[in-house]
Length: 397
Ligand SMILES: *Cc1c(COP(=O)(O)O)cnc(C)c1O
Ligand SMILES: [Zn+2]
Image (cartoon, rainbow, N blue to C red; front, side, top):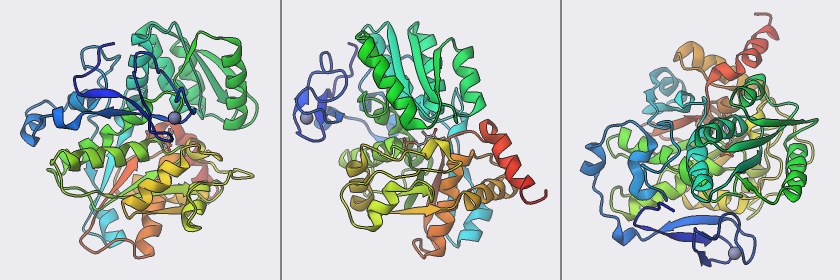
């Protein structure tokens, strides 16, 4: 494999054993825990100036802190997205500054591309002929795109409620798509059966591959650099499986430990009231979630009733002195409309949970009057134009 010099191996978050990435490809061979890429930080010698001297053209510009070399990556120059000042939102929320990290500007329109570029690079370097995953929609679309680029066949399992754009584009990218009646859990069960039947399929599913949260961590590196190395006070993230949240928390610790920054941003998980297992666990002071019985929200990307990495998510929220917030679908869609009308930016329904959650946190007094708040717009609004437009219709508009 073409790994970077400081990449040491994959460490299990449960048993803490470290494994060779050549042979350990997915979950912990000893205990089944999630594997996390680890580095010899003492061997990483990069300064702020080094990063600043590089073009802001791709997340792979943080190559030293990624497992694989930029040259070997299956990449479409994902990342390097804009961080847009939102002065009206800042006024409305009574804080110093609000910025939206606009991940809709990625190759397939969501930040899932940051995860797939690293996961697909690993798949290619392990010689995979076929990749597979279950997804609520965006990850499936992204995987089909990156698999096509890598010359690998993809098998994508989506629930019937996945959005039309996701389904259409899996076909367009040449993916083998299975639509399963129901929700993400049903798609996951069909995927698991298919994996049992096909020994040679390589999983690129959330937290099954060790590399998706690793790719998503680059969002935080970019935010800090875009703020001229000021760590934002608060980062609000629309949380499903929590991949991006744990990734960004890890990235914040890495920058701090490398001496590039001094502190960590407070991380917040925003969920929809119809499926909020992380919020409930946080509020009840629990270390792990309880599966949500009847998930029901228009925010498909965060309708994850049983997020397996919840202990890790909850740790990140508590270690960073952040929090968790759930708002209603109607408040979430209102937030998408408000951001579009006041700031021009287009947010998908799922992503607007972060905007809505940030407002609710502001109302609860979570932010100070001079604070900087970053809202993660994880995907483009135009994949959900019908959903947000229908919300207006429900109000007679
Ligand atoms: C997948 C997805 C999420 C949730 O991501 P996690 O990191 O799994 O919590 C949020 N927003 C959008 C648009 C998504 O596609
Ligand atoms: Zn283990």
